Length: 527
Image 1 (cartoon, one colour):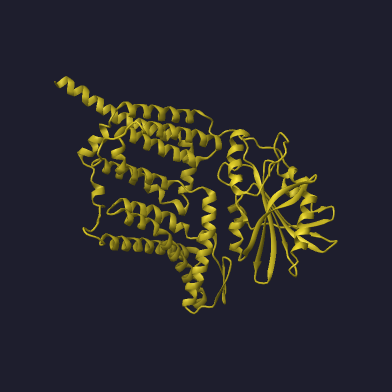
Image 2: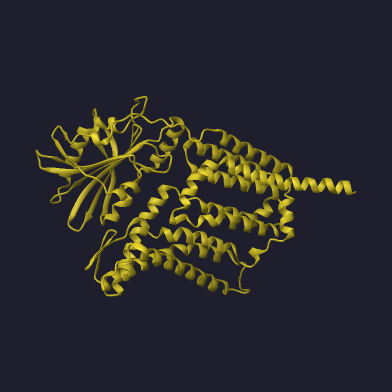
C-alpha cells in the first residue's frame, strides 16, 4: 500500500512540475516579444502593468482553492492549437502584441485542459486580467487618444468658465488672457484611463456581487478618467489665469497628475462602496481572502491534474513555443531602395515649392522614417497648396500612418463633408482618394489624402489593414506612406481648389514611385 501511494504522489507531483515547465517554456518561446513589452511598461500609461502579472498569479492560485474541477477538458486542446497558430502568425507579421495574446491564450487553454470547463468559470477572470499588460494596437490608441484629447479640451473649457476665467477653445489649444494652454497628446487622459481600467478590473474580480455591478465598475473608468482629466486641465488654466502660475510643466505638473489619479481611485472606491450596499444580501469585497494561500492551495498547484487532455495541450504549447524560439528574432523584411524625400524637387514644371520642418517632438511622436512638408504654388494662377508625405520603411513595430481624420479636429477644424473621389495620377490612370472639406471660423480648405502602400493607392482604411497583413505575409514588406494635400478655398470657389490639387497630383504622380516604392513585380496598383 505504501509503495502504491508513493507512486501516486510522485505522479501528481510530476503534474506540478509539468505545469511549471509549460509556463516557463511559453514565456521563453515568446521572450523576444516581451522585450518591447517591458519598454512599453516604462511609459506612464502602462507602468501599472508591472503589478498585474503577480496579482493575476496570486488571484489564480487563490481561486484554485474553490474551483470545481470537471466538465469538458478536451476543448482546451484546440484552444492551445489556436494559440500556437496566433503566435506563429504574429511572427510572420512582426506583431509582438499578437505573440503575447497567443501566449496568454495558450496558458488559458492549458488550464482548461487540466481543470475542465467548470473550473474556468472562476479561473478565467485572472487569466483575462493578464491581457491588461499589453498596450492596445496603435490604431486604436491613436483614435482613442485623439477623441479623448479633444473631449478633455472641451470639458476643460467648460470647467474653466465656471471660475469666470475668459477662455476660448481652438482645437486642443485653450486661449487665455495670460497665454495659451495646449492640451498635448500626453494630457489626453489615457495616463489615467489605462491604469484605472486595470485597477477597476482587479476590484471587480474581488467583488462578490452581481455581474452588472462589476461591469458598471469597469465602464465607469471612462467618465471618471475624462472628467478628472478635464478638471486637472481647468485647474492649470485657473492658476494661470488668476495667479499667472504655470503648472503645465515641471514638478508641479507631475505632482498634480499623481494627486488627480489618487482622486480617481478614491472616486472608484466610493462607487464600489455604494454598489456593494445595494441589494439584499449586500455584496462583499474579498480583498482579505486574496491573501489566503494555504496548504490546500499549494497542494492543488503541486498536484496539478495530469490527464490525456492536459498532456496533449501542454505538448502542443511547448512544441509551438519551441518552434517560435527557434525562428529568427525577426523575419528579414524586404526594404526596397528609394530616394529620400529631402530630394523631392522644389521646382518642377510650373510648381515652385518651399519646404518646412516639423517640430521635433511632433516628428518623434509620428514615428515615420522620412517625411516631406512643403508649400507649392502655381504662379500662373497664383494658387497654392500644402503637400505632406509621411513614409514608413517598416510598420512591423506598430508605427504606421494614421488617418488625418484623427488630427484635423485637434487643430480646431470641423469636417463638414467627406467623400471618396477619383484623381488623375499617372499615365491616364485615376486613383481613389479621400476628399474632405474642413472649416475653422472664416477659413475653408479642401483636404485630399490616401495611403500609398507598396504600389497600391488606398483610400479605404479597412482595405489598408487587410493589405498590410496580406503583404507582410506574402511579400514580406510593410513599407508605406500617407500622402495628404491641402488647398485653401477662396471666396467659396471649391472648384478652383479642386482643380489646383488635380493638376498637382497629375504632374507629380509619376515621381511618387521613386520616393515611395511600388510593388517589386511592377504590377498594376490596386485602388
